[in-house]
Length: 220
Length: 334
Image (cartoon, rainbow over all chains, first blue to last red; front, side, top):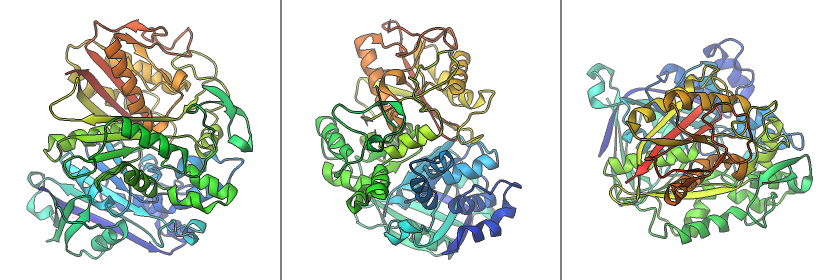
């Protein structure tokens, strides 16, 4: 069984909010002048990471099924004169790069993942087998426009970040919850939206989460 | 690698592309990568993967996103069912008969290294008996158009580590796989390393410290081994100079080669594609030189010509990506 203590958690639920509103709401959380080209997902992920900033020795795991949906839409619509900025911004894992670059924050290990109903399980597995004393698991989704109409984007924008520490690396006062992951033969899945809801509401969870993993999430 | 219109049938400047034989840049339905990758899997690691003790790590940077471009250009809805990482890999999983334990890693051009590192950690933790790491990236106008817009896919042929006035890259289709096991095989991953500078999305810290930070653990793990160096070497000037300089500091006197002047840059798959070539070079006793480059080079350690490697104990393979991401490994004889 893999296990880590939860040291901190941060969530941002932007729902169906327009990117301009998100930018206006969150720009004070970033260095002055840095948010003009940031995507909505970049802003949301960056805001959560501001609450638990990654250190150079941390392992940072990023999970998003669809990534920079609006930048992808805009990049596709820029052809035939393809936009270099939108090309960079549309590439996985642009949102964490946007944040870490504007804050000039080095991180040794960054594991960007994508996928479906097993994405949460796999992101946690990467974080929990990492040798680092602290792992951060962050991610989110962005509501698109024409990709949303085609059923190919999230229907809401959100982001989360979770700081996980080894039991021997956290004082008792710092622990707010616990994550346990173990192998199971049960089928199941836990998508990123459902995972976000668990973190946002500090809800407990126990069950199969896909790819042969079972998750126990508890809060102190 | 041959000059091809950057947007395929839609035309544009001629840029150097290394497409698979008989293939065109434009997206087709079903996508051309599926048959190629399933054939590679069938001929190589075989079946029985994707169960808990035999996980799969699929890595790359595009994952069928060319289908999105094709949909937007041609309106063919069928492309959309293959055009994001989850859908793309689910089609592949079914085609290959894999179980559900398939993790998708996507960190641009260091993607393959992430799969290798996570697979190794699963083995070390006793959570797997062996692991399959598969990486593929097939070109489309989506990606060629993007690199052309960045002006590094500019029509010039790539000349990795060459001193010249203008840098240039070429792009290539690529796919490869590795099976990792804790206790069998002819080759061993002696060390793996990652570092992310996060200084600029498309640039490195000018002091080369990001390259140094990635290579330092590899140099420490190498001990007294005599190693040759396979660099990332896309053909861009500044990154080439910084990479060669850092290699010189970490592994003084070791010969450095880069192969993207022949293969093109195979993007997220380059770490595995070039690792496979490095292994074959060690088997054959001869390391390919830096194809496409001519003197002068950015450092004296760059080898333009092939050389015998029988006196070497292994190789360091490195890759770099957007965001100042660096990855490297040391491979030696088991």
